[in-house]
Length: 324
Image (cartoon, rainbow, N blue to C red):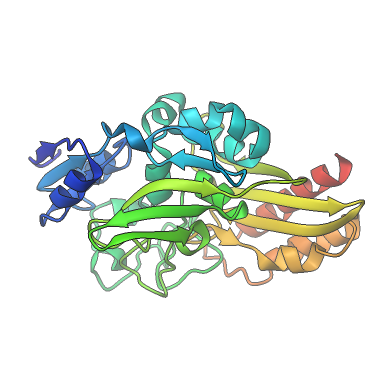
């Protein structure tokens, strides 16, 4: 059951930041994650500050440099359906289309999807885990079949955002506005590993709001997003990957490979890139890259299946580019 809270709908960013400065205030955009967190008592709210009515933060448009600007309040469904996104950033369109169900894509925003809380059932349940101020990660020795195999410890969550994975692959930037002014942060630097700070998932400070996503120009690159899940209709990923590749004839000259559901953050696999860049994308290189990507994996008691699952997925996705 939800606890009682006040609901405020400011008409401007300035007013929103003022309301968010009050202790106990929580930001509301699409609300698909916020309401679940309130219902599950992950955190409480005295005031819910809804920015859903601020139209300035909606829509997709070209930038003067040839990239794209996406307002943080643009729905996931609109991102998936947008012609500019589908033509120039297909991995992002594919990732957005794979998010949840049609109802949630129509309600949820791209900014909210990037900022969403982890889905660990201990964190979402009645357990005082590390992330909620306790002294123990219950997943480490408990039910951990969906938890991370890379970058874990002392907490073993996986980041649930498909969209964030694609944005890291495209080297996108986030515009953030808060009480101290505005700043720009690469999506790759936005999420926080538990070993850095177990109590936060992003670099957002109190009162800060993600307002815009900027995608750089894409020239002569190919890209894709693959998601594997238990139920194809709406589940979160148990494995996923965004690929951005540039070829010069048959040689890979540039590559970005980012994994979903492998780590507490969208996991940039430098190992795949180091193995492939400068080489032709042949079968031997592909197998080596997949093995290299999992060389540092440290599975828990119930999720060692993820290692061969990721290896097989990486091989399949890279092979698809080889054949295209």
